[in-house]
Image (cartoon, rainbow, N blue to C red):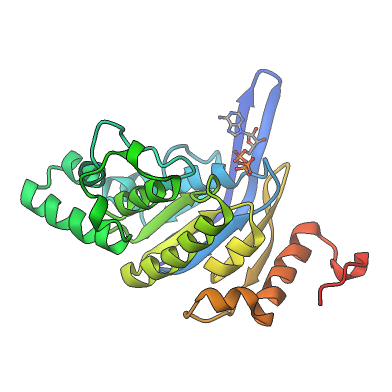
Length: 263
Ligand SMILES: Nc1ncnc2c1ncn2[C@@H]1O[C@H](COP(=O)(O)OP(=O)(O)OP(=O)(O)O)[C@@H](O)[C@H]1O
């Protein structure tokens, strides 16, 4: 069963100044356990596509299923977790209480919540901060709490919209490495929106390149870098080759043809 299947999905926003064709004819399949990134210029509809999958909005055309269900059914079945650019933690709740929130909302008992939260905090390397409040954590740590929270209900799909966008480069790379590990351990499929080509390449099995107005998929680049994605990979020729392939797809013309030396 595929995690996501989009067939001819379109989204038109009606506005006072006229219709905005945010997405048109989106065909995309994300397999169970697969990591797919969406990349493209600002306004090409990446967030809109993610929001449609998350049932935060509805398509105006086409068909969209999540594990064979409508996005609404998938949301009700808690098939996916969501993490956005802002960690969105509740400042008055401790780290543990933030991670437990979705479980609490779904009536999971106290003991089970505590066990699960401890397990997740260990997964994201924050066991020692369980009793801290969000303002006592760095931005990267807050993001890790948000990721732990998004995994609370063991979703088979994670929807992430620039979750590392606000982090410094070093923290960002560390978080990417951790996310690869967390995904391998949890087996979740991921749809990941980013503006960073190296980030998309490092994380993904496939990079979906989008073009704007209306947002369409212009290329899908398979990234064959294997499952072992350690820090060394960032300096590997295969990594640079994949970055170049995505960059060329994004710009629509081979970068080499424009005189840029990539060696
Ligand atoms: N609620 C809305 N009402 C009207 N237009 C909208 C709405 N949401 C998005 N849009 C428009 O749809 C288009 C796609 O927006 P979207 O946020 O999906 O792009 P994006 O690729 O995620 O951009 P960015 O990289 O800047 O975050 C844009 O032109 C945007 O102005």
